[in-house]
Length: 323
Image 1 (cartoon, rainbow, N blue to C red):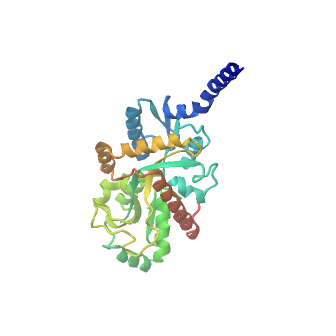
Image 2: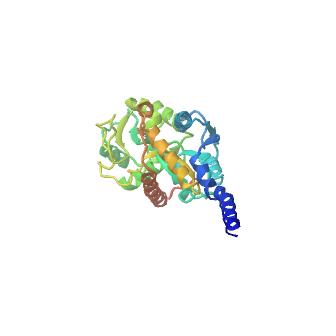
Image 3: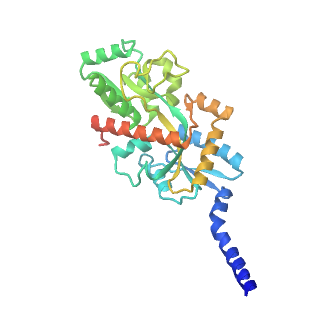
């Protein structure tokens, strides 16, 4: 009788062991199939270039295909929704930008940017520089504010689209200084810079990553963030000049669906931090006029919470809409 009991116990243990450990083994073996990195914007831009660089490094390290898929549309929400509603197994990851948070207050979304994603890390950080046309007779921000106030309705600020960082920053500058700069939206950074170069536009918040090479052609009056740029040390921050809420910076970051198993999320996070410490990766990011990221999951989560609150307040106070 004792032998039969032992045999049954061993049989029961053998049958339960795969069930108890299968999930852990699957996570330990991760990845064992192709990973899709969804970029919710067209190919060819900075977001796409950074995603492909990270994907290649990850593929080399994990010896598993990491494929970048561009899923543009609806301001990036189509691709983001695909990841938010997709399988939470680690094989679909989102590579996106700070617009993910700004859209929370601007439009009705099919997902919650805070609750539906597990943030991994920022890959790169992109300050904005407030620039005016070279022909404008000012040399600093105080002179610009004085000039605009003395000429109501004459001066404008351009953006790369309604609801973008440049739009929020321009309206915030209006609010805090009492200026009445007219918002002129363009379809992307390239036509915005072209308008500035051609003199059709008087001022703009320009993305440091995409516009850096053109900065010598403009008068630069301030930069967002809490610190000066290492490659533009003479340019004061807007905070230094007495303005508030310009600390949030543009960023490019990686996210997984929130239900992704923690061991998989942790493995991704460690790998991203490793990649962003590589000298060649940092060199390429800095050559784009960007600041390399690479903070922990918790640090990125704190940035997201803080940024989302600041952007929501700006949008409400300035009554910004997409209409």
